[in-house]
Image 1 (spheres, rainbow, N blue to C red):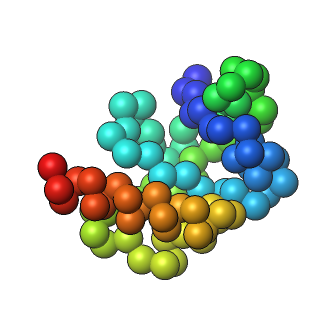
Image 2 (cartoon, rainbow, N blue to C red):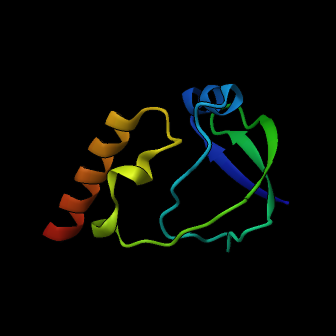
Length: 92
């Protein structure tokens, strides 16, 4: 079974239902609709739950919209990360 690792504060959000989506850059796990996977705490390596991929969208970073942030809980932090990533990729 596949494993996706999350920082501890995101594990809490997953368990509470505040985080229902994730973004993955450079998907090395070949994630597909229907896949079952374990959500793992990145620090403790504890599996916190089992989940199923119900939808998957591939999108260029420049085409991410505000609607794409839904289900992430900490939207402001995610938007800041995306801006930083875009700026880094443009300058290299």
